[in-house]
Length: 212
Ligand SMILES: Nc1ncnc2c1ncn2[C@@H]1O[C@H](COP(=O)(O)OP(=O)(O)O)[C@@H](O)[C@H]1O
Ligand SMILES: [Mg+2]
Image (cartoon, rainbow, N blue to C red; front, side):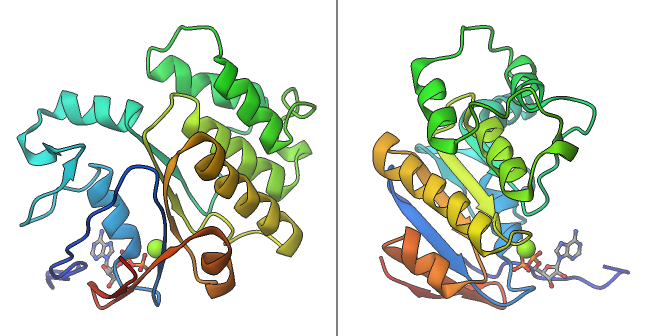
């Protein structure tokens, strides 16, 4: 940053089992988002190893990493990042197109849309949706290609209490009913407690607490 080296992560050692729901807490600047970028193959670490399902990301070609992001890992951000000119279903569909997924929508996905309470909202554009609905569309988009891992970076950061509860319930249900592995960053200890048995705390680029 301006010629100054910033160590966003400084020796994080973390192992996540399939089907876990992990809540990550920590002050702003502690390296939480960077951890997600590294885990999702968006940012290569300057040192250390990241393995997804036993596969070392550094050993992959750029193309393989892109495939990984399209199929193995789904992202949900604090900002919903929906395309404003597309309807909810088109926003979801475009993620399938990009991944080259031309299969009919699966039973699983239809179930998830029901769980998300979006069945009657699919033809609306983002401006006609509440914040909570937009975030649930973003979750549907993140999981439509069946990622094994869902990374949610402060998914309730822009939501009021009622909408936060809806989104947290959705993530919890995805994990409990469909076995989705979820890692969620949050500022809210109550939210962490509600969704997850395993809480991780970060500070200054280090994991300072892990229930594992
Ligand atoms: N692209 C970047 N260039 C330089 N510094 C960065 C960059 N991204 C993040 N940082 C720095 O790395 C540290 C960790 O940031 P981040 O992972 O965003 O933390 P958190 O998500 O916990 O708030 C912070 O000091 C931040 O300023
Ligand atoms: Mg962050």
